[in-house]
Length: 424
Ligand SMILES: Cc1cc2nc3c(=O)[nH]c(=O)nc-3n(C[C@H](O)[C@H](O)[C@H](O)COP(=O)(O)O)c2cc1C
Image (cartoon, rainbow, N blue to C red; front, side):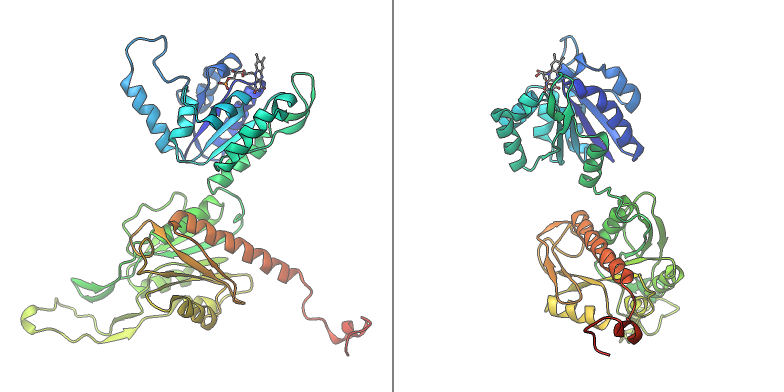
């Protein structure tokens, strides 16, 4: 995953080297971009040596001369290829330029050109930080969706005390991890994800299947991995690159998927059952290709194993089961019925007939249905974002589940007798 680290011209510029290391420790590929002033405080060589990448310090070729087209293209590519941009330290000057929308050097141009989330960690003299101009600039940037990490209070390099110290490297790194969906909140969980479509054979050449692309399930697997879960991805047919560091098992039919899920059922702590498993399969699989000359066959279908139902029925305490309901009519009623009938912890419902939702597309429009009737309708967003919102709900369910387990088990009547006012 590629990110950019912007360094502006403040005393705290040297701390950016430590931040760079912290980001790299998490496996991020970091492109460092320095302002002209930053070079007065730390040399680009420091960042180039640590990052293993050339440091970008300006818009144009060093020392004038012919414009370097290759380098210009490379610069534009940075804006498009990064998943987040952090600037630490961000100077008062830089905040002012960004608030005004200026683009007079590479870093400010990058801020305007990128669609990636931007995090600024300002550091400056306390009077500069408290100046009405800086306050207004910070407010303007916040309103535009830029995340500002408030500086810490303390002794400042200028000899004064107050707010202005760069936030801790750990706090800045954590903000980046959250922006990238790299929280640790699923650490210790084994998340089993089913994804893609199953294929139910009819004869050696043909099968019954559906339009599921697997994108939602793969996004879930990737998001869970980023949040430090161990992930087992059981994938039906899908033409997608599996996410890194995920154990993948490929299956074809619903029966194969049922067997693969059963194999991992004991070790999984969270089940995200996003695969579009066929509900029915041909009752008879022909050993030879059905021929046109033999006339149109009448297909007899039989139900397949209900994988989700079986997992939910046989779950152990603490195992969370999330189901998906891809519907074309009475979406919420059908999803609520599925939640109740299978005693799931969460159902993710979507109307696959809606534009920008369901099969094949990169976005989804879903409603989360919880037991007890709570519903959370999410607006149209990328499947990656939907995946993170589902995992947020899983984390929430997990903490409720932990609180439930921490509560004393059913009070014995002997214990109750000891509490004044309780019935015997
Ligand atoms: C020794 C020294 C230390 C400075 N420290 C800071 C600082 O911590 N924060 C800040 O906002 N400006 C600081 N400045 C001022 C900036 O370097 C100056 O505003 C510069 O134009 C910033 O350029 P840039 O925003 O393009 O990096 C300092 C200047 C000097 C000479």
